[in-house]
Length: 73
Image (tube, rainbow, N blue to C red; front, side, top):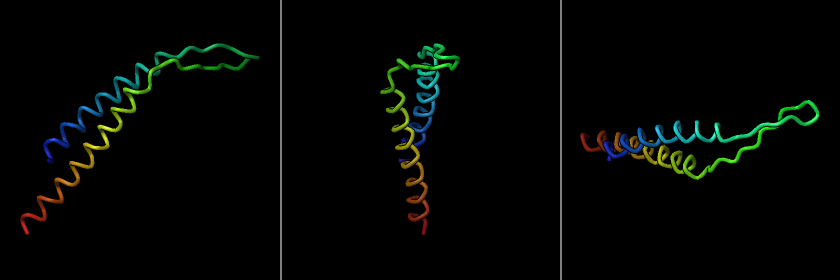
């Protein structure tokens, strides 16, 4: 499970970076009374899914380390 956790962690981080950059680039800004207002028209679903995969990868990696320690005792 530790290997699966590491793979999910890496894929999740890559997804968060890629979809995060896309979400930041999909915003429009305009000026209202001298203030810059940014409106995002990005699809946040892939970014949220990548964050969830990252968290699952962390949980599997940490739980995998604990089981290895418990098995050797």
